[in-house]
Image 1: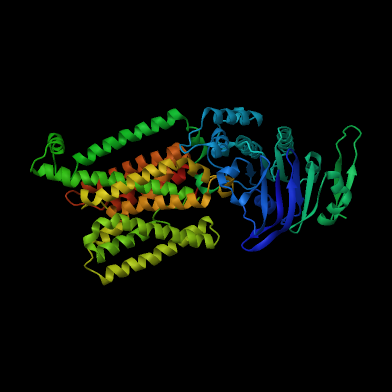
Image 2: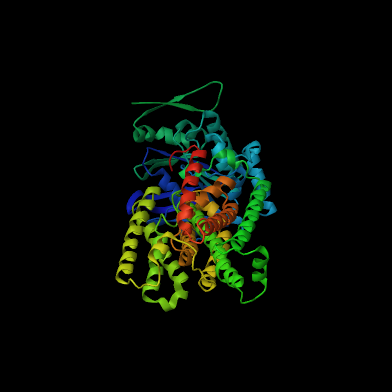
Length: 259
Length: 344
């Protein structure tokens, strides 16, 4: 579990998220939603220690002890927390080499991967269905395959907590659903997944909890049904949200229109 | 995708198999060995092969012994060391600054070490053995100044190059002032600016060589971390890399390598820019392979340019910097055209 206690953070002295109190429970999927510029990515970066807090603390539960992230070393954090940014450099390397980078926190000074590292990398590639592409150059792949390769890298990092910043953006619907399926599998494996999504239907369909942000604050953080019922979605996004029921599928879907 | 990555076209990256890399390195080793052989055998004085070999292995007072041991051998070593160190410095700078335009001369490293070399020559000529250390210090100050300015102004690829130009120009003005007010400085201004290996002695090389070998080994040790760094700051940090610390260490290594080379070779053209690109063209972006390939390719290129500079108009000699620019410029354009990318 990871929790933020009264956290304020931002860039160049400007506060983006203010007095945030939130916990992400073990083995759950939490999706952060909100308007552009409301602080979703800042919250994700602060939670993963990529951005230092201006005040407050981020506590990581390690074997029952709450450790302050700011006092931990980068390699130690990287064994507990992984973060996949939205905008990534696409290096001119093979899928296999990229996924192997996920093992970096576990490599010793020689930086030579051991048998176990190779096994985990192969498994991660297999889990993402990338076996046939593993020797392909990343730059030759489609956007969806690239994103899957990056997620395979995160899988190889094998951390308890996974932060994904807009993992489905720019992807076709098939790849979007595949990635959401992977996220659900991560939950089954006991991982804590926190992600930012813009597609509200995807967010509501796969998350245990939704964190709706508005102007640097948390408007509501609860299970999807409560968030919908609270009416905060309509308020924050300035839209109208309607439930669309289907007799065939038990899954709830929503239609969003301008008010 | 950054320009650096775009420049290495995918159809060549598929050659990135172990056997392909070994073949490339074997060919480069052979070319380097051949270049070393030619560099010792050829020169303005015509020596037979037997004379050269005798001079190498048997001490005597013959002219051949003097020429081989005091002129050709130091020159050959100087070319190999300068070529490899400037090329590897280029690879490091391009990776660390994530900028395909970065090279020792573009981002102020040459100017910084040049100033400190000139300061030693002008004010402390008796401490000439400190030249490599001073050049390193100058390079380190310059590269950090450029990086600091770029960071303050957004650290985009363009601001790094622009602040490099500004810092280079400012430092260049100080260098020119020193050379103007101390005309008796024990350094030839033109020769230093163009760069070359005439007059290189083992004495001068000794200190620089130690720095360069240390720098090369160290950059090889950090090559995997450089791969992680090229994923971008956020990804690298989330993988546990201390990004700012490694960036500073790598900039220091690049400064050490280029400063040491400049201390005896002068401001050699743009070898640090073109060789890394050529090497990337051959073996792709994995720094573990790229650093070794760049070092060998840089040594070969510098060696052959130096041989040409000695024999083209023998007994007169053209500074190697001129030959490098004559060959390197069109070659770089050829590389750009091959990659079907009209701009950097």
